[in-house]
Length: 292
Image 1 (tube, rainbow, N blue to C red):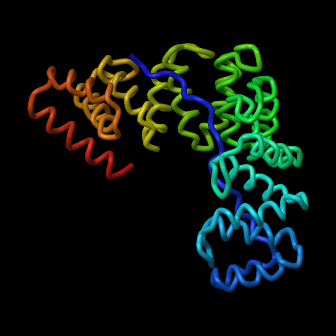
Image 2: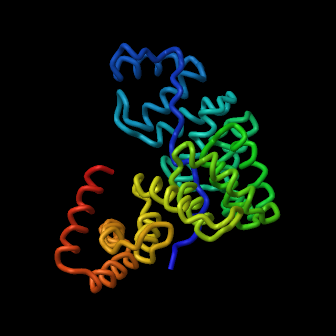
C-alpha cells in the first residue's frame, strides 16, 4: 500500500533582510548596538533589524517579547518584512500567546504589499480555518499570488488544491504543473506528490519510472513517505526489477526514522531473504544514511 499526497505547507521561517545599520564586516554585538540606537530614533529598518536580532539571539540574548515589540514598531510603519515576522511570532506563540487572528492581520498587511512568504502563510491560515473561517477560495487566491512569484511552498500548496479540488475544480494536470515547479526548486513534498501521481496515473499516463525518479529525489532529502513507497516499488517490482535487498534497505531507513508501517514491511520482506541478503541490505542502508 502506497502512502498518499502530503498536506499544506506553512513558511516556518522568519525573514532576515538587513537594513543600513547592519554592517556584515562588524560583529553581532556592535551591529546590535548601532541598530538599537537608530531604532530608538524611529528608523523602521533598524527597528526590524533589532527585532531580528532579538528573535535569533544575535548580539543579544534571545528574547521573543522584545522581538515582538520591535517588529510591531516597524510593522506599524508599514515594513512588510516586519509585518510577516510579527505574524509568524503570533502564529507560533513566541513573545505572546498564540493568536491566529493577529497572525492573519499582519500576514494580510504584508501580503497586500506582495510579500510572497506572507501570501503563502495567509493562504494556509484560510485553508486551515485559523484566525478566520475556513475559506479555500481565499486560500487559492493567495497561493496563486505567491506561486506566481516563484515561491516553492505556495506552488506545492497550489498543487495540493488542484489535486484535492479545494478552492478550484479538481484538475490533476494543473496539480502536476505546480508540483513540477516546486519540485524543480527542491521541494521534497512536491517531489513525493509527483511520484504518487505518476504511480497512480493521475494527470499523466501511469509511469513508474517517473514515480521512482521523483520518489528518489524526495527520499534523498529524508522524506520518509518517499522512502516507504520506494520500498514498496522495489518489493513489487513496479518500475524497477523486483529487488528484496533494496526494498529492505528503503523500509529499514524509513523505519529508522520512526515509520512503523515501514518497520512492519521490512520484517515481511526479510522473511523472503537469506541472511546474506539481509546483511547486504543493512550495509546499503548505512551507506545511504551516511550519504544523504
